[in-house]
Image (tube, rainbow, N blue to C red; front, side, top):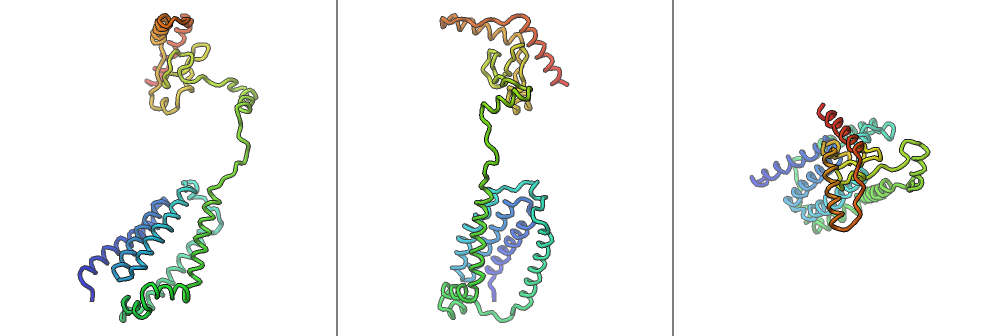
Length: 285
């Protein structure tokens, strides 16, 4: 006979375990599947503890949930699974093999449930007493009747750990280009002989949202971070701003006793103002 507390506990844990198992199969992200499987293992461990199999429940939490599942999770996080990898079949026929293996496992599971004796229960207490204890009974089964399955499982886990290290180790396939090689490549292509100015260069402004000005006075938008350009946070350098910055530099140079920078010509200011106006018109459209 089962008490009310045991029945409630079983149905609550059973729902959690089955829900986690379904989430393991149905989740699209491998990390979510691993976390759902960890929840299923914790629910099973509580069931073991409630039935008196204390050693098996603790091992279920410490070894499977705390070690093996975390190992799987770390492998997934290190290797990485993208949407492109999920639709690419690396091994030919793996989908067919997975379907056949799943059907075979389902047949074995159904056969095991059909042949189970659901009328006469020995109970964990009687089994522990017959074997001399829970730990002694598990040790006898693991190292006698199920020793082959135990060794194969250990070899599988070691292979998974070695495979994770092999997959995450990437050797460089080409020599990294230095400054000299990059400069020679720019000259060879002829598209950009010299590097672009950094934000604020030639603009008399040191803000990162101020585009650098080329020698002809036109702003180089590419010198500003692409994120700021996409957000529309790039500062437009008009002639008025340049004139005020020039006045500030003149007064600062006089106060410090330094040589004042050369003021910009009217043509340069007009060119900057025209470019800024065109940029505002494009953004407004």
